[in-house]
Image (tube, rainbow, N blue to C red; front, side, top):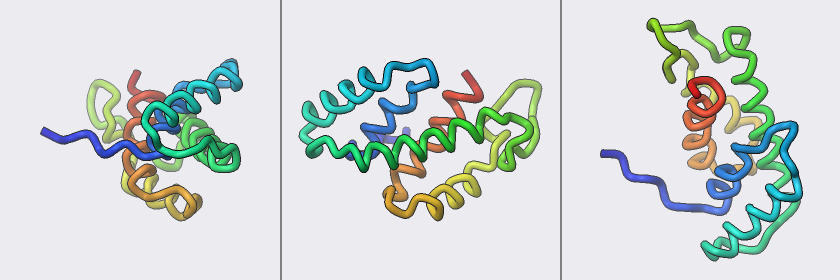
Length: 121
């Protein structure tokens, strides 16, 4: 059984941002992030850092939303959509190189979660 990675500032904020869509109330999302960070004593709210995490999340969300047109989409490997339909390793490497300011473990855990959330659900 795989254990949940330790909570970090970036992972907690990404968990909140993952559910932010174009129609979402940004102020509400930011308040939720502030509460989560404060509740877990992960540090003060840093708008600049949040903006970087949001850009990263938006790029990942947009790429996955391209479905079969995504450069990371391999092909449907079965009758149903699966996580393996995307090249998670390459996607993670590319995002880590585009966002060096985000710790790699946060990127590594977010990409599969994002594929699940935006593609499989």
